[in-house]
Amino acid sequence: MQVLEDIYEEIKEKTDFTAFDKFEDLIKKTITKAVISGDDNPKIFSVSLKFQQLLEGLVYFANSKGKEKAMDVGAQTLLIITDAMQFDLDENEAFLLYHLNKMGKFRKRESDLLSELKKLWQQYPEYEMEEREFSRSLKNLMRAKFINYRKGNILLNTSFVVRYRI
Image 1: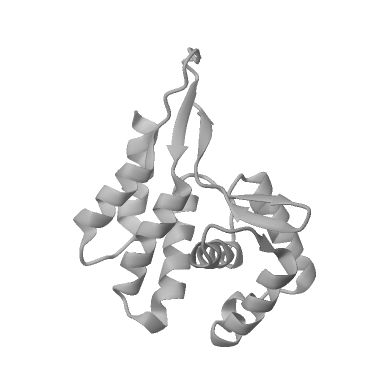
Image 2 (image 1 turned 135 degrees about the vertical axis):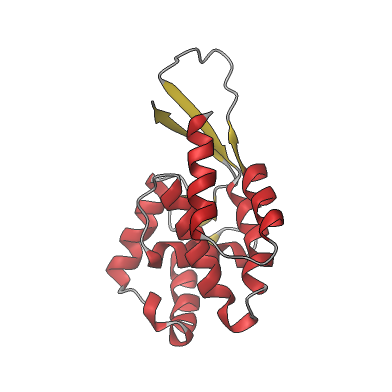
């Protein structure tokens, strides 16, 4: 259980929201111990990440800092959470994931997403990527299980299990 407490503590130290108790509730609801039947290996700790629920909850907290800062705050908070869970994401990938959540639960073509992001990058130039870097980021997010990416179609992964060797 110490793994979860460490994750919660790191997120708590790095975030700053006025309704922090509600934010903490969101984190504890979406990042929990995974119960996997038949898994009796004491050296592996499994954590369930309800990713879609986390992103949907983040929208409320990001918007609390002002509409003009919401995308930036949401992406930075997502980066803090993924860092605490020991994922290797950069700011651009966190921004991309946060934007994907705002697009709904439907599959999105890579070319359509890129054209939408190009418009958004005019407002947030610090997150801009080249096309090759964008494609590479999508593949990295797929390998990390944040998205399902097949035949040019992208869909957020709603939840998945992260395993830690302790």
